[in-house]
Amino acid sequence: AISACEKGHQWETALSLLAEMRDHGITPDEITYSAAIMACEKGKQPDRAFDIFREALSGGVFVTLWNKKDVDLHGLCVPVARTAIRSILIDATVRPTERQFHDCERDGDLIIITGRGKHSEGGEALLRPAISAMFDHDFKGELECREDAQNAGILVIPAASMQAWVARRRAARRDEVRVDVP
Image 1 (cartoon, one colour):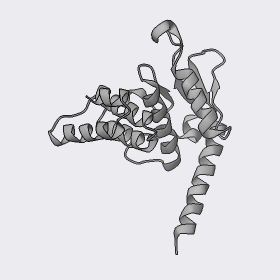
Image 2: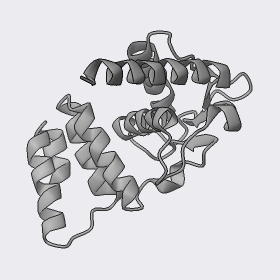
Image 3: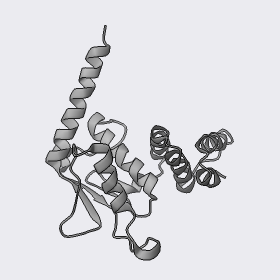
Image 4: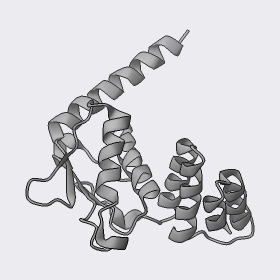
């Protein structure tokens, strides 16, 4: 049913069904969470998609894609992959204590494994161009993301670029807090 909501651009209904599942003691799985995230992305609700992704992570879903130094997006659909990358980047700035995060000073470059498209319909890569486009559009050159020289199925965010971006984000957050404090 949630998958049908995604196809019909009914993100609110998808979230209602997800809540109803939880209310009835049914634990959503990766397919259910993915469909809800896709519905939110198609409904232009990236913040809601992010919240669902975080809920899934806290429930033990999607945890195998991430190991501090690299993120393996194989098997994820494009909306879930974009949401996963956003989550990882936000965690790099806030450094949560309840889950692992990429520390660019300690862990070095962030490696994003997208694959070359061998498992996609028609053998054409979907994740790499979508993630590259996300960086071009959402970060507008503030955060470098480049294709690995030896492997076209890998994107790299250099540690220096990530460190500078994280520092700017943290400074902006501190400035926001200072403005809000009476």
